[in-house]
Amino acid sequence: MHNSELHDVATALRTARLDRVPIPAPTKTWPGLDADRAFQVQQINVDHAVAGGDRVVGYKLGNIAKAMQDAFGLDQPDYGYLLATTFACEGTTLDRGRFIEPFVELEPAFVLRAHLRGPHLTVADVITAIDYVVPAIEIIDSRVQNWAIDLPDTLADNGSTGAVLLGGTPRRLTGLSLRDTPGALSFDGRRVVAGNTGAILGNPLAATAWLANRLAAYDIAFTPGQVILPGSCLAAVPLREQGHWSGTFAHLGTVEFDVHTA
Picture (tube, helix red, strand yellow):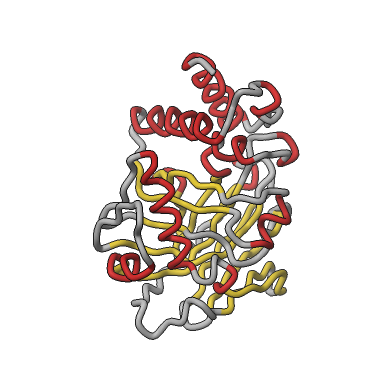
């Protein structure tokens, strides 16, 4: 693919996000789009956002748990940038209309106190670099029609990011057992899905090492203060109706938000 075609893909996805009108899978329109070229598309749109006043505040890993891969028909994780404008405050009300076809995920979030640069990082390196953990909700949303995505499609679409809410209960790693921390999502007081952080590549620390090592191929390193989302440990739940969402991890805390529909 020529560089101009990569910019065409980026523009199509950016327009779909702004207009909230999904497009056919980019891999169908641009058959030469592979994972590496798709990540270039992602970077084009991140650069565009930063030039417009946004900023990169971290990175995300998606579809790492089998429940997520089965749900979206993928057999490999995706990954993307976290932009400041993606974040919302817990306890606030989000407008369903800002999304296309959103799903709600519960996952831990790591805030870093040290640099992480791959390749060849280990879980020990990740443990040393983490300042604290908070519960997080990620709302994923695809600019691709009907979520009919292959890996390059979701990579080009910045890992299908929608919104991120961080909980206000920071915890140190000591005292937590992230290979075995139960979590659950509830809607209007009714539990809708449950899981365990052990489903995130054994534990989310290992998933973070995987992400840092993968992004090292693109000369990306994580820096102090950045937020790392290592992926959901449970199946994503469609966000359709007005109501109250709550996500809780044992020993880690709760993060909540409301959703409004017009």
